[in-house]
Length: 68
Image (cartoon, rainbow, N blue to C red; front, side):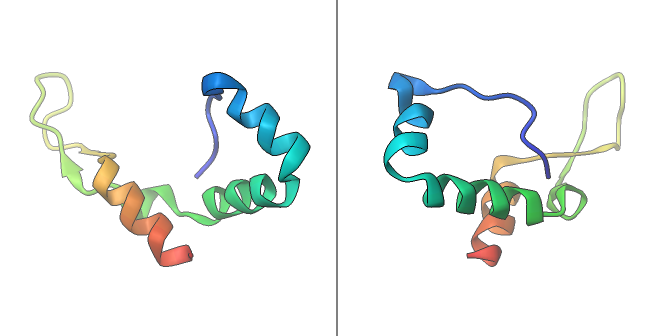
């Protein structure tokens, strides 16, 4: 999996960069290790791509918890 965008609520990322850089590197490493294809657990019922597998937050959480 890759980080597609970053949003730093209340400068949280900057805080981690300054005070806990090793923790931020660990989080980024775990995200990089996750295979996004194995997390696709939801089947689309939409009209454009019916039957396509999509990402679901529960699948992400499960994949990340397996890495920690």
